[in-house]
Length: 100
Image (cartoon, rainbow, N blue to C red; front, top):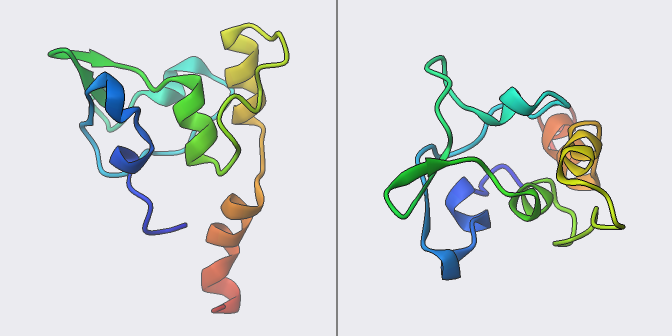
């Protein structure tokens, strides 16, 4: 999990390029998707800066793509992911403690 880079989770068929190697903490607030102290959007698409898509966040968190679809609006899906704890996320957090 720790070696996954943002570029690995972006939709390659849409020519999306990561502007950062990894993303910072994602919370239920929409501005948490912006990165660094300069508050930049983490993706470049068609020459313009863009936010992460919900499906990309699902993959980053280790969930299957479209896992949060269930007829929810985009903002609700982002809030759900901001509260989510996947096995992969917990493993990455606890790995240094237990030295798996």
